[in-house]
Image (cartoon, rainbow, N blue to C red; front, top):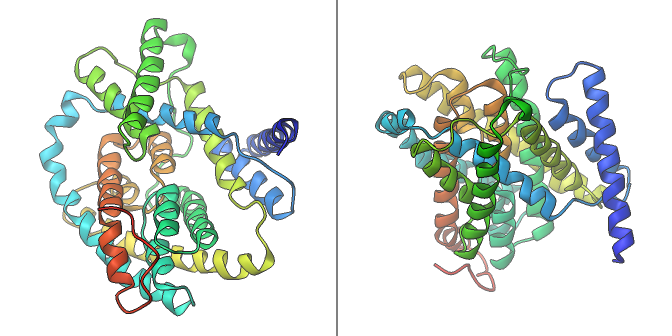
Length: 354
């Protein structure tokens, strides 16, 4: 595609996203920088508008969330880690329950064993599409099913947080840049870049978030960083995440909408029931408060759940520890799970290396 065409499509995408943000803000709707661009771009994509994501710009925006999480890892949080282990120990059980329900569900919906397995797994969208494709699954189905999972969780979670748990959706996302020390913001930028590129170099999954998180956490524990990224940076990250979710639906055909997207929508209801079960367990046994328990087990993307945790003022460390555990277990267990999924079916061309 010619450069000018790519640039013009990206410009149209940003313009539509900004219009969505402005509309949500004017109507007083919650999370305008996340929901506005997401809904506007989703509708435009389904209407056939030629949208295009912002590539490395969107990827880089995730480093902001990594820095925000790392800044929340303080000595006080580390001292509470042993108290979290009881609820963290429920994460593997949660993943097994999802597999036991999700894989048969997608098989009954007519998907092959490999696609069914990777469609059911609540891992990162990119990870599950890449692993599933390498294992012989249907990349388009996986992409749309997981995009639908993320989009629906991001849409439904704030409603439940507000209605069920009484959590405010207008909480402060951070201090304005003008109120933060310039030197500390410069350190945050350096931590984001060093963490991101360093994690990429060693092949770490989720490098854009995990790398900056690790570097910033070390700086936080060393008493170098005392605040999270400024409000403007967090809002920019929300905007780019919203754009990315909407752009996932570019080129969706009526057949794909009926089969892949509808299958994903129904599966979200199954996931919601399982997440509600886990939330009830952790709150009933006093392992977490309702908001933290819900966000910790909501099967959305790590970036999206981080944004929501910041907005409602939840314990960011608690939420992220559970999501990291889920993602690590899903990624590391992918080869074994895929083999089990295809045991009764045709073996895939090849599996990701152990």
